[in-house]
Length: 427
Image (cartoon, rainbow, N blue to C red; front, side):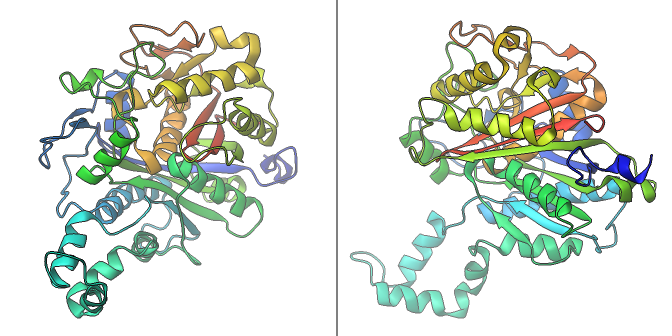
């Protein structure tokens, strides 16, 4: 290839993916996750790590094969991120000695003091009755709570991952709700395109399955309550869908300038061809009813990739299994893809691993790349009662098809929407 071949139609560096790492409830590593997912197996089950007595939802896609003690979201998020990043870096063959030659962009859950720590602080501040806030501050200032102070600072996970892998520059932490993992990849792409980095380690991670999170999402009526048969609870795009199922895990991608990757003999696993985002301030949780931000994000990703709607082979949908989100995504796809929608394969990984929140966009990006590499579109399980109002071609059993391009959608609470286009080769 000539030097010009390593540039896109706008003259920007082509962005190659040279490493993929995944941790999900289906297994540790991309191979285990892909094998289970492409076979349509579910990683959703009854929660065993803490008591669910009194909770409306008692199921989740938890990662039970790694140590999850102590059960604190930042620590679990860090653990999952480290495992996924180690796999991606090893596959890419760079930074394996703790000297990654690029920047870190990591999506992490919003960090705040969790209930057990709040209770301990309150007890240290004076026990029962009205909270003695002066005492609480004094207790928090003692060395007894130094570790908590470090743990619950938003950038701590990024700092620790950066130190472990030796990434360059200031690590970037971000949290854009359910689009966070995709946003981390977008930031890596943009940094390389601008010439600020030759490589990027992009991670989405989430370890937020805990009683507090389950209660909060239940109060929003966002979670499925089908506890009796957990593996059938998440049913994106089905007429009888009743909410999402929480999941956890992480995914990491190593991005590089394609020319540099080829120059060092790296195996290119695919390309990030386009990124599109659109935010709106319509509501803290609901989507804009006209679907305009969703439509704009999809169109922006296609425009950034230099592709038209006809060039997309399949959609890795956000597909949460909530009544409103699935409806809005279908509306957006219909607006962009028009007459193609009834025959354009759409799938949702969340049917098998649940909604991994800040990790979702990154895990689904990894699965999109594996879809291209394996020529197999994973199924959307539990799609037994199609919703005729959506009009989508939902992949119910895995389809073996040549896949050159995938559109991966991530739509978050608060109108934070990010879409990514992946390709087997440059556009």
